[in-house]
Image (tube, rainbow, N blue to C red; front, top):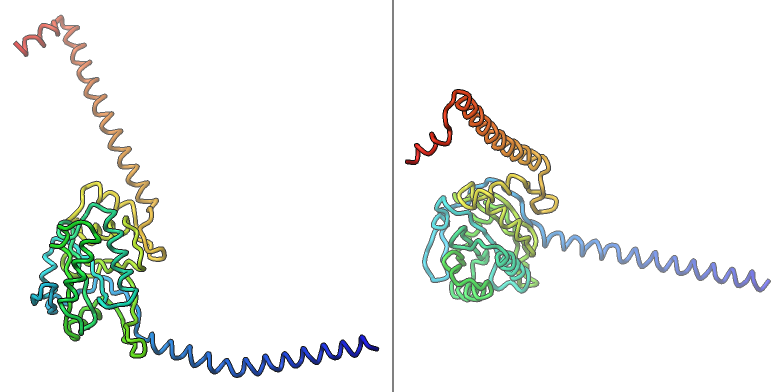
Length: 300
């Protein structure tokens, strides 16, 4: 009898706990829904919409780190690809990670801003000034460890309308969070062709050096890199799901076949030439010609 009473007590306790949990869930669900809705609203319009081959506004005006008024067209001379990073200089974390990641990748390749490519770091905060961009440039050139890169790495600030023209052209969405006093935005390197068209997006804050190099090679449209570099690009293709270049098996097989045919052709040509010489010498020997004397006469 006592066991039955205890069982009833346990059932009652479980029932009470279930009722309490249900009540708590009913109370928490609207609160969670409100939080989720608020987060969605805060991030609305934030992110990157890829705009392949889109032309950036070369006439948009900015101010460089030395206080000079420039247009974006200054950095697109039709010869060098450009790496674009969209950040703001007072960003508490993400922007720093983006530029640090770019520096880390560039330190691992021989190519350098100002030589094989140009680099633009543009603030999307219209309140920021050239004084701040100059300080940022000095810090990052020092971190990079290649002083000559200063001539090819440019830090720009600008007005709202010019910033919007650039960010909308490349599909870069960002939004000011008044409560946190900071911008919400995404992280990526945007690789542009020498005439200012979007070639490739490389996402994240850590960038594979080989991917950066091949992206520049591809965007350079044959204007940079060695013949071997172009062969490497033929053997790889960009895997958007992994965000990097992967081996293209079919192209490798095709290239291998071409190399084999070339080697075989070279070998056969040498063998045929040697055989022709042997046949010629055989005919002369049969005709009683002293081949040794004939060859000596050529060099006399």
